[in-house]
Length: 67
Image 1 (tube, rainbow, N blue to C red):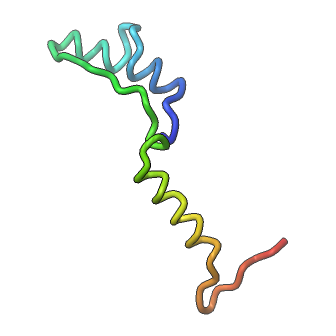
Image 2 (image 1 turned 120 degrees about the vertical axis):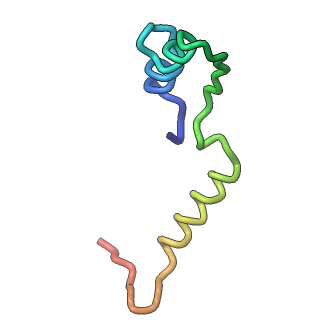
Image 3 (image 1 turned 90 degrees about the horizontal axis):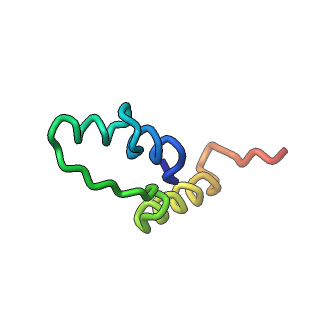
């Protein structure tokens, strides 16, 4: 979900009759698509970087595995 790839563009927001968007429109909903992945959100980016930093920081009783 970090990028809006094939699944988003076709299965969710595509114009084929079996896409999620088409099914919702057929059911009477107004659909506005937002074709951006979570990776474009700065809060998600910050969270991702923090998780990487946390994973690289040695914890008490847990060493860093270097192969």
